[in-house]
Each structure stands twice: as structure tokens, then as C-alpha cells.
Length: 158
Image (tube, rainbow, N blue to C red; front, side, top):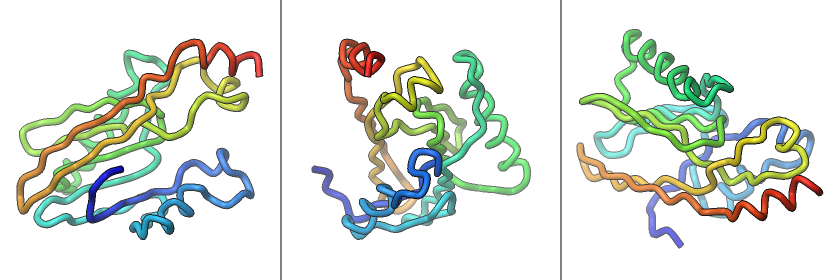
């Protein structure tokens, strides 16, 4: 269990749910979280977070994060002054930043299944990121679950 005062949620890709109800929104409601649909700017004390489900990415491993950083650099040139930028869509956990901001792609809750195996052979990073914000300062940590390789081999034959 995570001891926190606020839960923030964004909507995942519709192709995961099609016409089914969004599990993201259901969990948000159950946790009395704040729903930001696909994106939003959120203020926690004096820290501004720019959150968005979709972020540009490349299918190449060596370029997957640079696409997102380019888009954040453009946001900052256009006057966006967020302290933290969070994108989710890629199902990978990576982070970078500069002296006045941090940017990251978050791990996901979606595991490999028959659908995801048709889209990618990469194992997703499953887990979460936790921020502790007090005034103008923040710390953060992450937890990536080590899903055994043999599990994915079983899914491949599903």
C-alpha cells in the first residue's frame, strides 16, 4: 500500500479498452483520485507537473526517449515552465532532465498478453513512480517489478 494524500490518473490508450469501461477511471474513482483524461497541468504546493498519457517516442531502443525530450524542450521554449514532465504511453521507464526540471516516461500496469505480443516483443516495465512534494522541494522514487522471463514465454504461446 502507498500512503499518499493524492492520486492522479490519466486515461490510457483506447485500443486497450475499445468499448469496455476504462479500468484506469474505475481505479481512480475507487481511490478518490483526480482524473485528468489524457493530459493536464497539476500544481502540488509550488511544484508544477505536466502529465500526459501520450508522448512522442521511437520504436528504436536508442531513440525512444530522445523523441520525448525534444518535445519537452519545445514546450519549454514555448514558455511551459513545469518542474516535472510525465509521459506514459511507451510502457517503459526512463528519465532525464536539466537543472530546473525532470522528465520521465512512466512504467505501466499492462503486462504482456496476446494483443501486446502482436505489437511489440519488448517486455514492458511494470511498476510505479512515487513523488514526495513539500513546498518547492520534491523527492521521487520508483519501483519496477521484476516479472520473470518464463512468464512471457508462456504468454507467447497463449
